Image 1 (cartoon, rainbow, N blue to C red):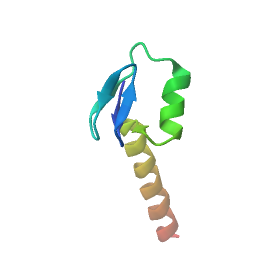
Image 2 (cartoon, rainbow, N blue to C red; image 1 turned 30 degrees about the vertical axis):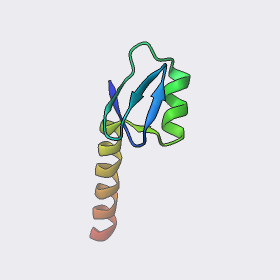
Image 3 (tube, rainbow, N blue to C red; image 1 turned 180 degrees about the vertical axis):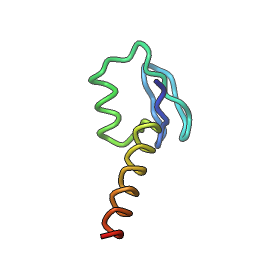
Image 4 (cartoon, helix red, strand yellow; image 1 turned 90 degrees about the horizontal axis):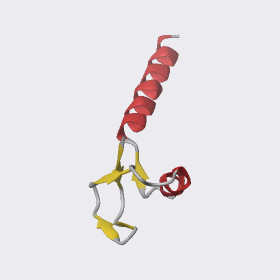
Length: 64
């Protein structure tokens, strides 16, 4: 699974610019969680799922 950077990230001596894919192979889960929590990287699939769920919830509330 690849994450996308939201800021400039330097990890293990390599630089990743904004909008670049951040590979998760060989990276500890704790490091990924730290970068996600600090909003340096984002999982585009999870983000799309959250947006879709929010839209469905809003549509359901509007229908009631």
